[in-house]
Each structure stands twice: as C-alpha cells, then as structure tokens.
Length: 464
Ligand code: SAH
Ligand code: SF4
Ligand code: F3S
Image (spheres, rainbow, N blue to C red):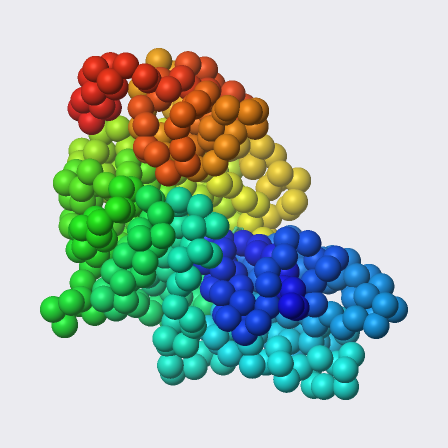
C-alpha cells in the first residue's frame, strides 16, 4: 500500500483540511504515515499569514527534496503536494521556485487532490499540476464521508468547519485572498457531521471558521441561521458534551450568541475574540470597523452572560503608523480586560494587502521592544488566570495519557491543559478534578473521587 504523509501549518482550518485531504487520499488507496521518510506522497498544507509562516514551506521543501532524491536512488517515486494558503497565494510560482513539487492545490479545490495526484509526477514523466480555483461546487460534497475508525483515532475533541473565507478585508490580512469569500455550510450537513463525530466517540466539538460568528448558513427551516442558533442545534446532538467555536470577530458578537454563553451548558466558558490593537486610530487603519470601547462593551456583555468566561485574543504590534501612544492604548486595553490567554505578533507586511503599501512601516527594533512588553503583561495575566483556578474543582475532559504512567491529560472548560493521576479513568471521560498547582504550561490536578465532593464542586463551578 502507498503511504501519504500530511503536514499541517497555520490555523485550525488547516488542521481540519489536512484531515479531510488525508481522508480523501486514504479512500483513494493510501495509508497515512507520520514520517516523511517512508512516504510515497508528501502533502504540505501551508499557511501564508505572516512572512515567517510562508518561508517555512520552502525550508521544509528543501528537506523533502533530500528525501525524494534518496528514495529515487532506491527506485521509489515520491510525489510532493503543496496545499493551503501559500498554494493559493503563489500558485504556479511554487513550481518555478521548487522543482521538487508536483502538485499545487488551493484550500477550495482539494477535493480534486486524489485525481491530481494520480495524473501528476514529474519523476515518472507525468505533468506538474496547479489548481487554485474557487469552484462553484462545494468541496465538502465531493469529499468522502467521515469514517468512524479514523475519527476515533483522532481523539475525543474534534474540529468541524462550519464557515470558511472572509469578507472583512482587514488591511493587514491575506485570508480574504487565500480563502476567498465567506461561505457558510448548511445546518443539516453540520448536524449530520456532528452526529457522526459523536457516534465515533467525540465528546467535544469546536466549530471553526475564519469568521465563525459571521455564520449565516441555511437552517433546517430553509431560513438563514446565525451561529447562536446553530450552537443550540449542535448542543442537541446526543453525545456532544462540550462545544467551542473559533475564530470570532468583535463586530459579529450578536445578542443570540452572547445569550448562548448564558443558556447553553454545553458551550464552554472560553472566548477567543481577536482585538489586534487598543488604539482607535490603528483599529481604523486596520479596517477592523470597531473602537477599543466598543470591544470593551462587547466583553462586558459577554461577562454579564457568563461571569467566569476565559477570554483570549490576538494582537499585532508595529502596524504601520503605530506610535508609542497607540501602543500604550493597546497596553491599557489589555490591563482593563484581563486575558486568560493570547497570541501576539509583530506586524508582517504581506504582499497584496493595503497595509503593506503604507509608507509608515515600523522599525524591527521598535516592534521587538513593543512585543516583549506586551507579552510580559499577557503572560502575567495568563498566570493570574491559571493561578485563580488553583484550589478549585473543574470538570476535565480526558484527552490522552499523560507524561507518566497512570497519568492523564485533558482540558478544563477554560481550555487549560490539566494533568492528573487517573487510575481507572479513561480517555473521553469528563471528571471533576481539583487543581492543586500551576506548572509552566499546564495545571496539576487530583481526581475528585468522593462523589459528594464532586457534586458540591460541580455546583460551585456552575455558580461561579
Ligand atoms: N479571523 C481572525 C484572525 C485570522 S488570522 C480575526 O479576524 O481576527 C490570525 C491572527 O494572525 C490575526 O488575528 C492577527 O493577529 C494575526 N495576523 C494576521 N495577519 C497578520 C500580519 N500581516 N502580521 C502579523 N500578524 C497577522
Ligand atoms: Fe483576516 Fe480580518 Fe478576515 Fe480575520 S476578519 S480573517 S483578520 S481579514
Ligand atoms: Fe494561515 Fe491560511 Fe489559516 S493563511 S492562518 S492557514 S487561513
């Protein structure tokens, strides 16, 4: 049997797409391997969001070339595919820059990948192929149905793409160009997929989309449904114990979605809501279409609905024209809100985006200094949030065996990694765990064995 190795870069959308590409190729006769060395087919599912992300592809292709050459000496062919957002952005340019590549396929046409792989292969005298179409037909309709054994092998927490693409055109961002226009999948399909996942043992589903809260898919009544409504429908699927969603835009946090955080026990108290900057001037230049205070108001509403919610965000420092005063506004917003976790980046000029053309680019050293200051504050807040859970009992979904024998690892409702001793407990269980200490990147817990104590703490955590 031929083997395929799939490597994923970038966001959760790519993780999901990588799984679906692997599914399509498995249905076409490949077995999946986790090493490139013995692969007959190597698929790199790439990310274009920042310069560093895009550059990774070419350094990885260098390594793949060595493998391909070594295998060729033994008379074995290795086909190489570049998929994802770099594929979409650079297209045929990749074939020119990297002779090792046989197929380039964009994020909206990868259902055609098995056919392309069959036809392509420069080493065996076949063609090199590029497909970066945004086809009319929905790729999801052409992908094989989810396979129970494959779902199970991937674990008890799964992603489900509900929405793709972006119409917002933030001035720094490549996503609207690499992923195309916003498209929402119909509710009936999503419920069908959620059922399949749950039946295969998935306990937690994260609904994903570049702009997931702009979801406006066709409902089961033929009308357009919002994400809030979709969440309720997913919560009704038997076996789905936990629901999350990501990534959201502040402008699309509507009332129904905020209310779902109050009304839906399955919806976990965690919200990733990128703000990028605290300066109104920079927010306007970024085309985010909201102010710092509008963001604060949304957060107030979310916290009113779910007081214990863990908040997370993305930040960009050194956007063109960002002054010291603008940056201080970002620091002030962070101090005002208090985030449980976050991602922060130096602005990276991306070809084809409006901000890249600005004459006011910020010096690298200034970006580095601002990033260090921001990250120090965000890290302090992360530790404070995690520290506040020490001594509390939280429900942990057990996801995998821990680092030591008898140990288990899982996630709290707040998406914190928790390790604890769990003899007799199994992956997929959701159990009360008392948090006893805070490690560098995870929390240490103790399973609460006493049923009465478990119940009392359940009440404590839902009342919190
Ligand atoms: N759809 C999401 C974000 C998708 S990209 C949103 O609207 O917020 C993930 C994150 O990468 C962004 O939130 C942003 O912080 C960062 N990012 C995007 N483009 C960037 C660029 N050109 N330079 C630096 N960071 C960038
Ligand atoms: Fe990019 Fe903005 Fe769209 Fe997010 S909302 S994907 S940052 S353009
Ligand atoms: Fe990267 Fe594309 Fe996701 S650019 S962040 S992989 S949408």
